[in-house]
Length: 452
Image (cartoon, rainbow, N blue to C red; front, side):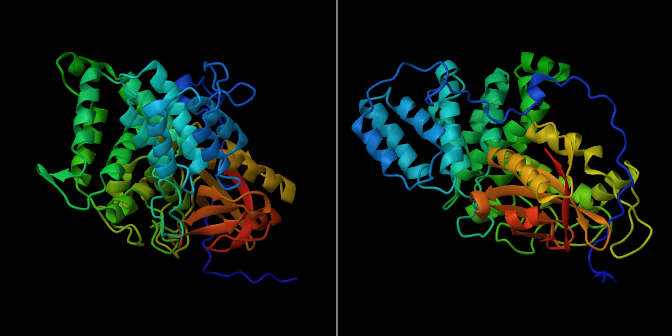
């Protein structure tokens, strides 16, 4: 039987075999992402919480009036326990905040989890995790980046990024904390003037996300940064954050959100494109790094992101990644090039900023194996950790792409995919991926590798 090969499909030549990995080095606790860092005891009560209290009627009414599936049973129980310890104005304030900014969003469950985690941290470090910080981080998870965009349901951060930001806030030096507070207070202002229509909340959420992307540098500053702090100076990592604050100060929400990512929030062909024939892996990592670090995302937007021009900063970065990792950069559509395996640079280019250590998962060619991989990816995606994938094309060759969100349950699950060849973002059905014959935008193939 002959096979008709569509020559328009990118046929990246990845190495025939993945390099043999050396024994893994011990990983410091701070480098390992914990998907469910918020521990709970049976019944949904937060660890370290108080004994069961009488549930105020307004709490019961709020939770029972939610549409089915809004909150997981665990988050609903934990929220009820937390709110039941409050009364009077304090309870009214928390309920109003949750009803107006969290429980009415498509990210209610993720944001409720973040709210609970942040309130627990606030209990122990109210000097650094203030009420304003709790609310900004929670809204950063809850509020869709683009409520009207087909691919804009996710917030500017996930629960993981909120945790990273909180840990950085707790661990940073006093001079860094003071500089950050100044930047947060200045949100919505440009040149000492309040800008009409500026997205103050969006600016603040992105600044805290940028802080989380620099968690290690801020919470454990190097020798030079420690020396500067003695004299009241700020760290190089905080200087990056405050420099970014100046760039986005007074921005309108549409521009702010568009320039904080390189996927297409409208679900179209406006995402970042690979500039070389075989640079799908470096491009996918640019996409994931931009999702983790808004400072980097804004830098990429200094030039058109949806372009195939290789003589650009984006193109040179992709070419350098190939050349430094055994690949060969040739113009799109030309022969003689070769790609690279994502794991060659995944932890240094992405894991460094989302504080997650990736592991390669080769998938057996069965629906059950593909479904199992998707199930594991769900947990990461709901936490805000993007999942790189590799697909094998039906006509030969492979391609690296990026998953950045998941919606729905069971057979209705869909995954937000960005394809670097076409620069296209859109939803694909989980059932189609599991079946083994999937339209991955640039062609039809099978999911073969995930990085978890």
